[in-house]
Length: 86
Ligand SMILES: [Zn+2]
View 1: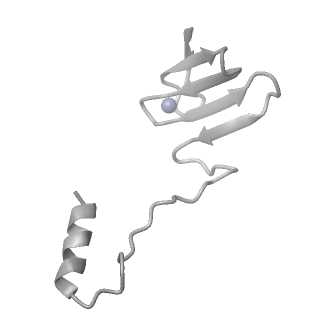
View 2 (view 1 turned 180 degrees about the vertical axis):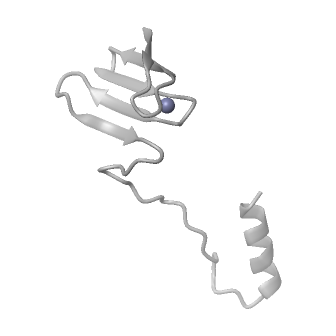
């Protein structure tokens, strides 16, 4: 079930998904990328993202670009970085 609500972050029309099989309510706004996932059983916020506002639980990005191996060949290292950036 999808419900139209006002985005608490930017005030635009956002969507609230009632995921009863997961016991979760997901609120998302395509305008500002707002995201809130809440557990309906415990009332706990599982995931939240509000652009432009400080998030209480900011998860560090797990993406990290590092050289695959200490390269004896500098050309292969440049190629690896170029592949990742596509
Ligand atoms: Zn919004």
